[in-house]
Amino acid sequence: MGFRQFLDGIPLWLAFIGTAALLFASWELGLRLGRARARSGEIRESLEGEVVGAALALLAFILGFTFSMAESRFDARRGAMLDEAIALREAYLRAGLVAEPQRSEVRDLLKRYVDSRIEVGVTGDLKLAVLRAEAFHDSLWANAVAMAATDRSDVTVMAVEGINNVVSAHVTRLQLVRGARVPDAVWLALYILSAFAMLLVGHHQGSKNDRQWFGVLLITLAFSMMITLIDDIDRPLQGYLKVSQQPFTDLRAWMDVSRAP
Figure 1 (cartoon, one colour):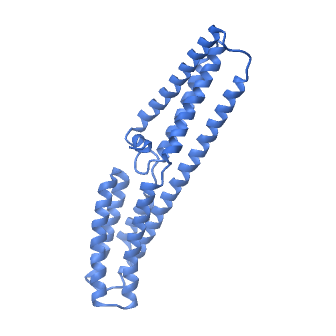
Figure 2 (spheres, helix red, strand yellow):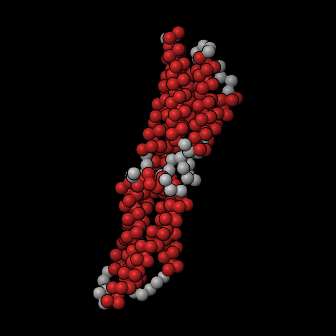
Figure 3 (tube, rainbow, N blue to C red):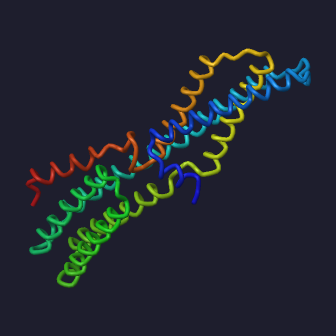
């Protein structure tokens, strides 16, 4: 199991608490190590303060880098949803070019397909969504085969292309949902560097016998919230920050009122 899969199995609120606990425990460990070294007289004048500042700056950098990476993938998933909604609209319009019964059957399938896509955004059940989508694709393609068997005109080709575009849009979006994630190596580096930075902060305070726990608590909560926010953005079908289903809800409303032949 990868680190990203491990995070996916944890609710966001628990991930936040776990992250905060890890950072605070790292600080406490560093504090005790610093005090122990100070009592033993091992600590001399050094650049430890500068090292702590550099570690915190590096942590801020990797936080910004990881956030940018997660946000770009979020935008890609949002774009893929819009492309799929456009493909479904085109397929619905092109279905009006063919004769009955395929015209009504294809349009009814497309309406139910959009309904299922909207439901996925609510339930977040990816496995069920894929199974349903593939079943709809099979039914749509069966109608495409029936169209081509009776009529091979350019009009039929356009309608079949519309169905094919729906299938292609689904494949693209599925790949983005499954594969467009922040890599495990980046997540591990983020957590290790966060713990290491807090360890250095604690060690520096311990060596000076300066336990500023309130300020450290605020820093810990701030870093934990930022890491959890990135985690939320990187979860395609979970969490609080999901890609809006508005393109599909608008499309479904249009299908109900459309008078396209």
